[in-house]
Image 1 (cartoon, helix red, strand yellow):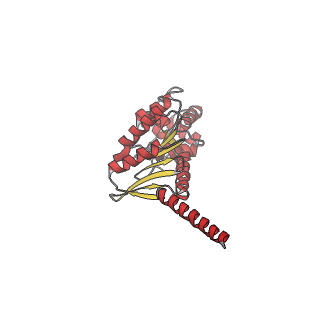
Image 2 (tube, one colour; image 1 turned 90 degrees about the horizontal axis):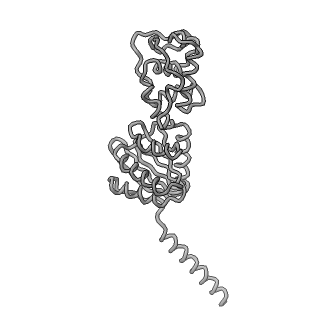
Image 3 (cartoon, helix red, strand yellow; image 1 turned 120 degrees about the horizontal axis):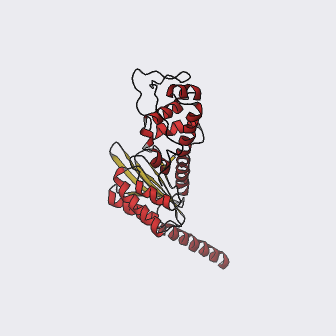
Length: 270
């Protein structure tokens, strides 16, 4: 009987200890007051507590400056920390991209992302702030099942996004008429022969342009290069009344000429 009572007593003590431990842990989800100071304070706390990695989504213009300042300081103090940033063209920080490039890192990519600010530390803790129809919501997530889904989503978007270093080097050149037409033909799937004939350049020169564009857009195929050009807004509006080249689906681009730039003319800016 005494032994049975001791066993029961031991189970009770163990249960109480587990309960107290659970009560002392932070909740799996913490809702934040959707105001900038509280959201940014939570972002700093999360980033400072990271051991190996910080993945950030910077698509909410209101937070971009403060988040970039925090990440820049983190980069300077903790060079061993792996930082990756997904942003939009509107929230791209050119100086930070160049700072990463000087350190030999391509850590910033551009993609179409909903209005949001998010950070994931070590794949375990995440801050998510979204804004829809003028309404903002923010939470800190610690449930592994949720944060792992967020990490998988980040990795998927990252794998299809455009390297910001290439964008900085290519953006200015992409405004040229010849490059615009080549990008358009890539996007619509025109044949090399048809496109080069309409551009009044040789097929060999046209293919050289294609190879350079694919390299700068970090594209594995011509189709991907065309998609990424559209994703980044590099394609201008179609000129009304213009005829597409033979072999190209109707898209309305005018024929054009011009002398192609020399090889390496689109070299990225470091």
